[in-house]
Image 1 (cartoon, one colour):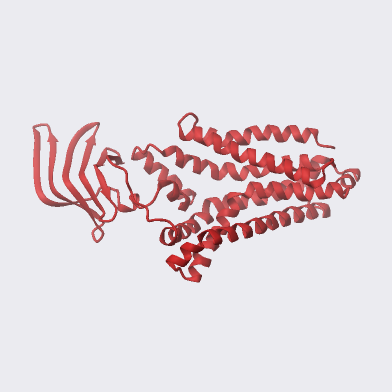
Image 2 (tube, rainbow, N blue to C red; image 1 turned 135 degrees about the vertical axis):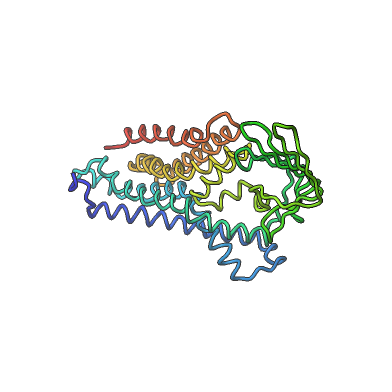
Amino acid sequence: MREKFKLKTIDLYIIRKFIGTYFFAILLIVGIAVIFDISEKLDDFMEKKPTLGAIIFDYYLNFIPYFANLFSSLFTFIAVIFFTSKMAYDTEIIAILSSGVSFRRLMYPYFVSASIIAILSFLLTSFIIPPANKVRLDFENTYIRRPYRYSDRNIHKQVRPGVFVYMESYNAFSQTAYKFSVEHFVDNRLQSKLMSNYARWDSTKNKWTAQDYYIRNYNAEGQEIISGSQIDTSVFITPKDFSHRADLLIETMNLFQLNDFIDQQRLQGADNVNVFLIEKYSRLAFPFSTFILTLIGVSLSSRKVRGGIGLHIGMGLGISFTYILFMRFTTMFAVGGLLTPGIAVWIPNIIYTFIAIGLYRLAPK
């Protein structure tokens, strides 16, 4: 069994072709994307005048891996279709099968290559790209986008078990929460409630300073009211929680940080937890699609057809774009609460796995 799956010369040949074509496609598409991006943002660069080093190292050096991984599945499909079609039209596939190599065995180097790409994609998405995204997004917020302003009103969050924070509005510029209150519950019974006209964040103490406050403490004898002009309080929420859009913030978190963030959002009773769960499950489901699209690509392009390589590439692009569209379509159902995030993210992989198996059985053996 070990000898059967030992890499042979033809395996190494296919792996080199696969990986080489994959990275060539990435370099080609990313190069075009960078040129278009520069032309689009040239006015911003001229107006805000970032240094050349910041443009290259803070933005584009972190933009390239983000963009490349975003379309990794598409690049994989194009690579498989392109070099396998060329092998088929050069009769290399026929020669390999005629030498006694089964079609199933021919898939072995393809899946070795797909495993390398899938592992690389998972590591990039989960651990390497998030810190790079933080630098890239900071650059965009400084030189390209307008500064983010938190605009939600009537904010009500559970920051710890039994601890609820309410603020009517929040001013990010002055780091001030208006109509600020903190409620403490024990066994679903209100124990105390702090209310103030406003609370300002004190960065030296890392605490909120409530102004013109009063506290109601509830006990068996009744209630006790304490009031004053100023009091410091820790409520496990900071201005950082209001400084970024949540959908962009999760792009800067590695997998472990994302898990902690989801637990925190659940604790706070956030109503958009599904968005964060979609991001979490996508980081595994997206790399797995590499295997599915590889199988579809080989099954489609391993035979000669009228129309040549162009027909294969056209069919491949059509299937890959429908896969990406279907992925976006199902995740919208998860955001709306009609599907659980895990099922929504994996439905395209499950359906296209059956399509891949069907095409594999129809492929020439």
